Amino acid sequence: MWRQLAGVVGTNVLGKAAALVAFTLVIRSLPQADYARYTLAYSAYGLLSGFAFIALNFAMVRAAARARVAAPDARPWAVYASYGVLQLLTFAACVGLALLLGGPLAAWAYGSPAHAPELQLGVLAAGGIVVSNYVLYILQADERFDAYNRQNAARHLLLLPLLGALWLLDTLAWRAVMAAFALSNLLPAFAYLIRPDNRRLLTLRDRDPALMRAALHGLGWMVAYFTCTSAVDYVGSALLARTAQAQLSAEAAAVALAEYGAAVRYFHVEILLLFSINAVLLPRFARAEGLAADARAFLRRWWAVLVPGYTLVALGLWLGEPLWVLANGEVYRSAYPYFAWMTLGAWAYLLFIPSLNALVRHGRYVALTACSALALGLNIALGLSVAAPYGAAGQAVLTAVCVPLIPALMTAVVWFTRERMDDAGSTPEAQAELA
Image 1 (cartoon, rainbow, N blue to C red):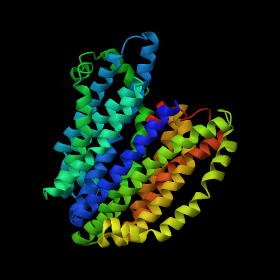
Image 2: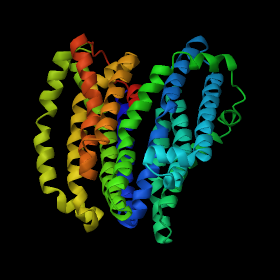
Image 3: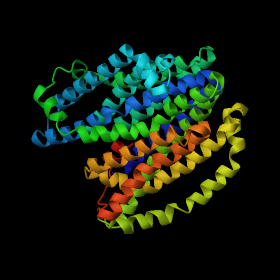
Image 4: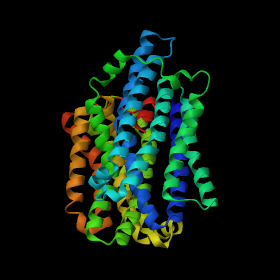
């Protein structure tokens, strides 16, 4: 188990390191007006990638496990094909809506129908991550963790040479960047799907209508949870676009959105990297507490170890502005405070991750949805009111607060219901799901 867990963590860290280099290249290379458009496109990309698809993948892994109990020596082709069809139909519906109603949707989300191209390309590019995640969850269900690690690393590592080639050809623009995201996800996934032992997945011929209907039953709360969580992560760009356009000139609004977008891209990578830290620390804590620790004792011990790290994080941020400018350029110096606030928010997120893990492992999706919906509601309400006069700075602070607010609210649920921590998140399978 520990070798598998180390592999998952190692490829996550390697992949996110490559992603950091790639994002820095994009930030330094795109003009701010272009980077602002990329920020909006990426918000649509990120929101759609976490929509119903993660819930369907979670359910697919569980259905495959049940099928293997019934037929241990048979690969659950019907499960994979049925859930693949559901994801294909869901994505086709999203693409259809984006293409047919791009203007109205962009006006509603971003404050102007002129942003329809960003929304549409973001939705189309999300097809790459949808296919890639589908393959990863199949590998997880098959318990082929070496192949999982290779697939996960490939999609991250491929992004950098694709962007590098665009930069060398002097064709690095926001549309090309989104295309590179799609290709870096699609190519490794298709390389897996076209192998002789996997080609049945491409045809989806093993789909079972009864299994598809059963899959949709009881999936609502899980879909709602992942949708709200993704929205909290990515809604800040849309809120800032709406408020900045109403208060600033087009050029100033683009600068504000680009600065916020630069900070929030690093923030998202930090959150994912902290999941890798969590993957190493949480199993050790769980075993030290006897795998069934009282939640309050467990969390006190967790915080006793991690809270002092805030001092080091704060010191690093106090000294870190020159490195930020060196990496991203003088033009983004004013975005450094946004990055600093979001980094503190990311560290706060790590403090509360055990509660999120516990509720996910115990299937408490009503509580999970309530917490994420409350954080999303506060994010939207405050983003359109209190934070709006402060532009990118206000939205950066709001994002830094609302993202860790979700697991903080979950911690309140765990704390007052005395939820048992069990072995939540202590297996490579669980960590692969949560990452």
